[in-house]
Structure formats: structure tokens, C-alpha cells
Length: 280
Image (cartoon, rainbow, N blue to C red; front, side, top):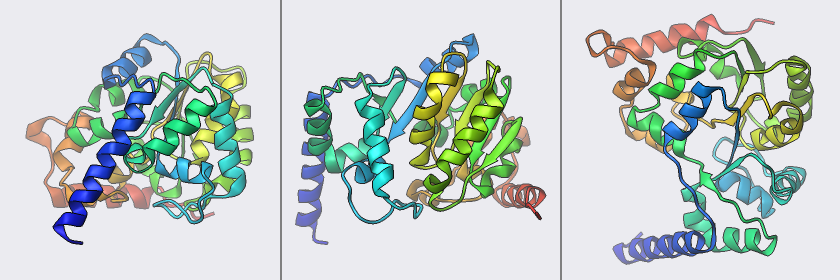
């Protein structure tokens, strides 16, 4: 790609993002806004709409970065969740707005979906910057139901979970209704539980379906892929481009004097993965 083409793409991304920001009520909050609510016991739910969710809503063919397909039913249920104007927080991803800002803003405004919209990347950015520690500290003080793929079972070296609900590593939407029923049974009569979703686009569907029953006194949080790097899975570009070891250690509260070297971190992650391998 020539320098001129790169410049043209950069200008177009800026135009898309500007168009969306001028037409949507964006209310980006710092991580402390959410961490403080968790610490105070103030329940909230958070659902992230990134490029994959919008591709599904717009019925584009193909799959997202993790090979989850854009099933027509998935797109319809994501659209229905937004059209219901849910009482929980909706996060919009800047990356999606850079490529599809005009279409996203027009789609939302045509349906009078006003927001305000949160920053979908607030947890991801804090993770990379090494400022996620307060949020993780509060997770450790709450019962957690972890919903994620097989490779995240060992995430309890970062925060403990009470129960792990495994979703398929690919096309987990096909099991979304089954997992939702299991979560509903687990949560019946319980309060103060953090439901931590790392379940791709299916997370939005499950959060929407569960919120009427569980949302008032629990946390339903779409945390995306932020935990992958702690399990040695570099699923995103910035995970591969950056040495996130120091940030991960700060997030976990490891004192500088006790922070392991990069190779030792890799061995610890490998050991954690092996400890959680299922044989059934």
C-alpha cells in the first residue's frame, strides 16, 4: 500500500469516527467509574458492541477475528437487544466506529436508540496500560461465575471463580441458549455474583436474555478477550506487538521486586493451562 493510500484510509477512518461521535451521545467513563460501583455493591451490566457485532447486525458474510461466524440469527438477536433499549450499559468500540461510524450512527438514530453509549474498550485499555488492578482486586472479593472458552479455565491464577461455564472456542453462539439456561439455574435466588463473560458475540445475547432476572442484584459483564494474554494466548494484534508482562504483573498486584522474568511468566502460564486441562 502506498503512502498516499495509507493517508487516504487514515482520513476516511477519522471522518467515520467524527461522524459517529457528532451524532451519538457518547459518555466514556474511566475504569474507576465501574470499579467503584463494583466495590460499593452497586449492580450494573455492560455489553460491548464491536466490529464483529456490527458485522453480524449488518448481515455481512464471514466471521470475526476468532472465527465465530456471523449467523443470521445472531445478527437478528444482537439488533433486537439494541432495539429493546436495554437499561444496562452499552459500549461502542472505536475500532468499529472508524470503519463503520456513519452506518452505525445512522442505524441507531433511525431507530431512536439514543444512548448514552459507553466506551467498549475501557477494560481492554486498562489491561494494556497496567491499570486494571483495582478492578481485579474487587473481582477477588466477589463470587465470580466465569463464562469462557477452554483456554481460560486457568484464569483463577488472576482471580478465583466459583464456577466455570465453558463455551466452545469457535461458534459459541450455537450453545448460547444452553449456557443461558445453566446460568439461570446457577443464579436462581442468588445475589452479588459477578458473571464475567468472555464469549465473543454470544456474550451480548446472553447478557440481554439474563438481565431481566439477574441484572438487578448482580453484575453481567462482557469483558471480551482481556484475559487471553494471561493464559499465553495472544489473540489480538497489540497482545502480539507489545510485551505486556509488566502491565500484567501490575494488574495482578505483583510487587516489582517479585515480578518474574518473561520466560518464567510463560512457564507459569503453561503450568496453569496444564492444571486445568479436562480429560472427560
